[in-house]
Amino acid sequence: MIPFSPPRIDAATIAGVTEVLQSGWITTGPKTKQFEKDITAYCGNKATVCVNSWTMGMQVLLHWWGIGEGDEVILPAYTYCASANVIVHSGAKLIMVDISNDDYNINLEHVEKAITSKTKAIIPVDIGGWPCDYDELFALADNYAYLFTPTNPLQEKLGRIAIIADAAHSFGARYKGKVVGSVADITVFSFHAVKNLTTAEGGAIAFNLPDGFDHEQIYKDFCIKILHGQSKDALAKTQKGAWRYDVEEPGFKCNMTDLQSVIGLIELGRYAENLARRKAIFERYSDAFRIDQRLLTPIFQTNDKLSCYHLYQLRIEGASELQRDEIITEISEQEVAVNVHFQPLPLLTAYKKRGYSIDNYPAAYLRYANEISLPVYYDLTDEQVQTVIDVVLRSVQKVMG
Image 1 (cartoon, one colour):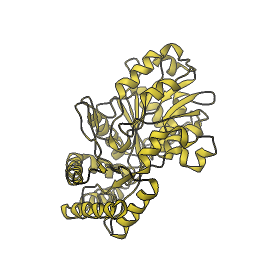
Image 2 (cartoon, one colour):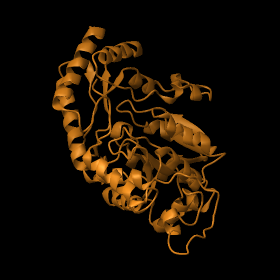
Image 3 (cartoon, one colour):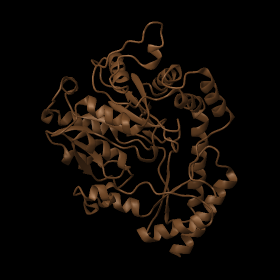
Image 4 (spheres, helix red, strand yellow):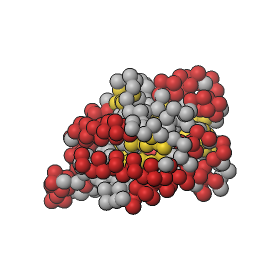
């Protein structure tokens, strides 16, 4: 079986983890602090805090920004459930909008119609590693600043809706010359096992708020928030006589460990070659699938945007959801693992129960119904890429004729 997206674990990874295990320091420590600095340098943002997952990073962020009951947060219907779950857990109202007809990202016209005086944040999702239209989103936030009603000093200082990027897929992607992380007000990354850059589990919050925000203080505040509100982390408490600490607020527990961070440091150090390999696979797929006009290949580069090649989202024009599933079965029976990204939120029971209907998100359903995500990862060989191509072409032909 050709797997879908295994992590890149090799001698360098094993040696790095072994070094940390033998160091006597395995929780948050020097490796985590270095990883945060290296992410900031790579992305060009102002401060970075590493956490144990995208989900908890976003959860703490929404809490810090003061989003809660009575507020509204705009989110595309086409995303993983985590993007919506954190909004529900914050107590805010989830305002779900459809996606564009041109890609899998949030529809700007629908965003504009959804903005009210209760809107505190827009969370665009860079599906598959393809950046959203950030300049247009910022323009909407500025245009509707007159409606914005801040409820705390942070919101008052910004003076408009916050643009908070769900960049779980898009570490390393670029928008108008900027690396994702330095584009939105705040960006949250995922380093889950299947992501381009992994720490097994993990994530990072990249702050890039306008001038006037003290990012050094924000960093210090977040280091406290993600460790139960404790004034000192474990490393600081090891200093001679420095056992005493305070708990400044009822915080969260979602710090990243050095065991995770060392994997991230190794991955970041070789990320350029990772992206180059992924790009080559994307190009190989796209060149091969031109033979069948029913196969709609993803856009991964324009003058303004550059993907990080996270997901190769192939679509089969004219295929129903049932036919797409039959094609996936055919592919799987030929020992190739594929996936679907994603089931739109209104198809999930949790969100059906909350009154969301897929009928209100036709673009999301149409793009989901005939989508298949193909294997893309550094260790995928040229021979395996050709096998995937051959299997997909045969399977589409068998099901669709």
